[in-house]
Image 1: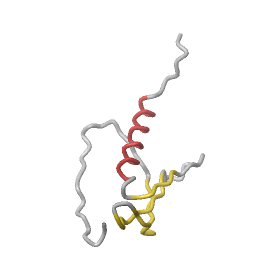
Image 2 (image 1 turned 60 degrees about the horizontal axis):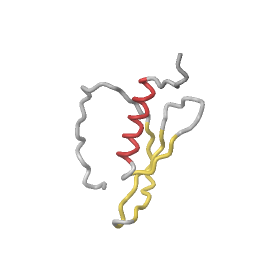
Image 3 (image 1 turned 90 degrees about the vertical axis):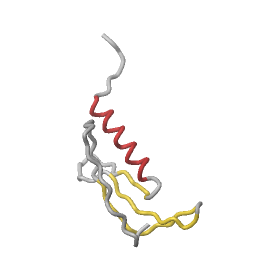
Image 4 (image 1 turned 180 degrees about the horizontal axis):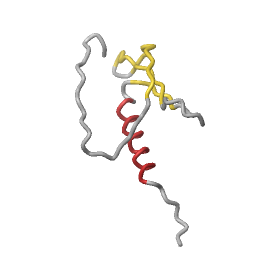
Length: 88
């Protein structure tokens, strides 16, 4: 018998996906994790940021909600969505 704690594969995949999500969006938005014992279907609230100078950002007051899903599938299809020139 071992006294070492075990971490399920699903927990590791979830943590890895959440880290990738946070890393990707940190440059463009302020993110706030929803911490509640009730599952409201939203994992993060975010607010898009505007770049003012190389060293400063400002809030756009545009809010969004995220329900994060992770998977260990390596056949996921990622596609580019056309950039709207009116936005950053």
